[in-house]
Amino acid sequence: MLNILIVEDEENLGITLSEYLKGLGYGCAWAKDARTARELFKNEKPGIILMDIGLPDGNGLDLAREFRKLRKDFVLLFLSALNDPETKVEGLEIGADDYITKPFALKELTLRLKRILSSQSEISKLPEEISHGPLKIWFKRYEVQDAEGTVIGLSQKECAILELLYTKKNEAVDREEIIEKIWGEDKYPSNRTVDNYIVKLRKWCESDSKKNIEIQSIRSIGYKLTTL
Amino acid sequence: MNIRNPFNHSSKLLFTLSLLWAAVLLMIGAWWVYVMVNFESFIMHSDRSRITKMISWEGGSFLVLLILLSFSLLILFMKDQKKTKSLQDFFASLTHELKTPLASIRLQGEVINEILESKNDPALDKLIVRLIDDTAKLETQMDKILQLSRIERGGELNLTTLPLVPFVKRLSKTWVPEQEVEISAPENNVNVEVDEFALELIMKNLLENTRIHTESKKIRIAVIVEKSNVRLTYIDQGEFKGDVEKLGTLFYKHNSRRGSGIGLYLSQKLLEKMHGSLNISKSGSGLQFDLLFKNSEDMNA
Image (cartoon, rainbow over all chains, first blue to last red; front, side, top):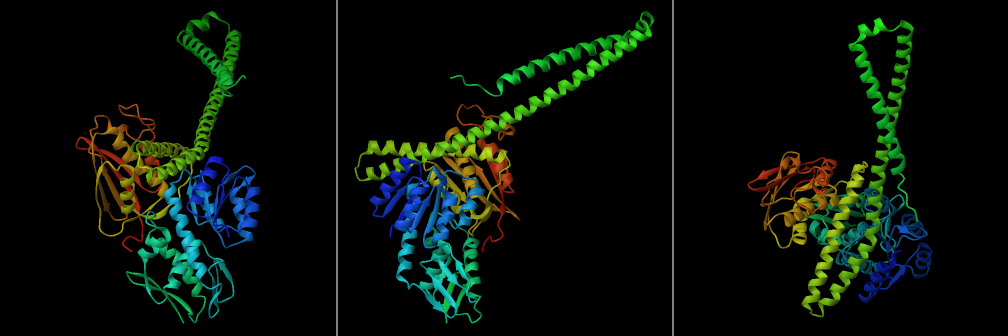
């Protein structure tokens, strides 16, 4: 499986980024238009897509929507010069895990990619399907199933938080640890941001009245995931 | 190739006609004032039907010219608005178009920087650091133009909760590493409701202004929590001899050829959009900037 697919119409930017990431040892491919991106997406099954919005033969937002319909098991990051909140919100609503504006700091981007790939590698060690009563988790597909049998899609960050809590089940996980592992040192999510992610995960596990999976708040520390 | 400015030709014609109409109106008005002053003798020396004819012709012409003048002024105003909007759109799209090649330059600069780290060549190291610094400065200027254009067109911001103190510390460290930045703040988390990108632009502008316009090597920043607000006081400890009242006016540049004159104006507008405000006052010989933010509810959570 290809690690990273770069969809970028600016030749110098696409080539330099692709060669740099290859130099770091990542499997990386570059598509300079939507047509090539579709082919590479179909044939190479990338784990991360860095998507530009203005493409010569289409719009990156529409292309991302098309890809999301086909597969859920990839992380989507927008890499665009457009900086208006409306486009950012639209990008995040498609299921992007981040919206990086150009020009971007290379170190910041590589750290972000490293973090995602390490989370994907941790996830790959877990079983394909995890069941606790009616609740199911498919980490690789970024999906969970609630007690009513509804399949819910998770974002990369939601999935990474769940994976962190799940692999440390029955242990209290510090909020700071969640921030550092999921966001990194340079990002500043507030405690409320972490809480918002937990709310969604808690809503999912609370659909099961028998509490086969429970996310508890540990006062002044963070959270603990317990299973029956 | 003959390049035409779509606004120039018709606007000039309309402006000349407006001047002509205004001159005729002025002459008719002056003539009427003269008639009013000498009304008695005028009545005596002219017959009634001639006076009625004169009043109806002159009055009619006056009214028609007045309407034409009003219309031409309205058209000129609308053209001016259109021209301003087109210029704003042009600068916004130009700036946007420049961002991708700038991203490419910065990326290549950073890759070269990494390669040079293993080469141990101080001269090249210096050059590449300067290149990256300059792309960052260019990026900030472009962001200012783009944000100003967005805000002037009624664009909104994306407010989220942000821990203020680590954010300001990180920016000071990366943006003005040569300055001694003293930050005093409460020990607990101070969260504010802001647009992260807008706040970054505001803080970068203050730090950049201090670096460019003052000799000061020390900046004092104090974060104070008030009832529903958070106040960030920024004191540059420089020397300012101009009129503080004029700071924050669009395109105002005090005694300086550097800068674009949009930074503080934009900062005020951005803070207003974030339900805050910016107040500028003198502090000793330098300047004090009071930034007011909306306190986030989850403070100290």
